[in-house]
Image (cartoon, rainbow, N blue to C red; front, side, top):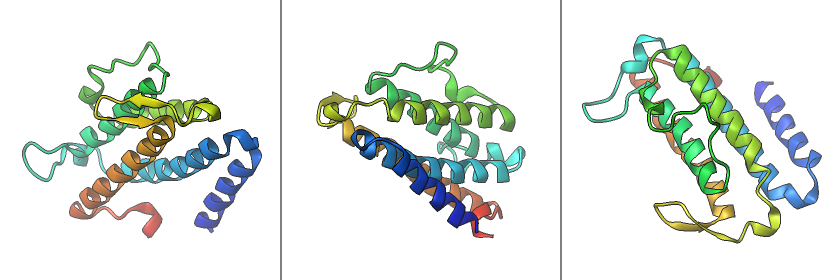
Length: 170
């Protein structure tokens, strides 16, 4: 039933937006779904597990979640949407504590979702320098979606290593 509700919400979001933002709205719907899974997984980890890392030199659970948050702001900035003034990009990955990490991730998720549909359709083909390569604005939106999915997979592996079952697979 939960999957059906999410799917119905996704379809509603897609249909609701005007035709000229169909691509942005579709990507936003998929990102919303992925973000929901990442948040539910982040909530399933204990406070202590936020410091767990598979080995030295690899991001911990908390650091991985903050990396997603930072990337949301970074990628949005490359699309012309600077982070809010109260976001310290230089120290975002230093936030400590489960509740603080979750708050930072949720805030960045809301930010990126708001900005995605502000990318003008007639500019989706324009090239943007993301610092790690030059891509179209459309590719930038897809990079945001892919990056979130990549780290969702990482966090699933972290969860399984810590006897945490992803909530949607129970």
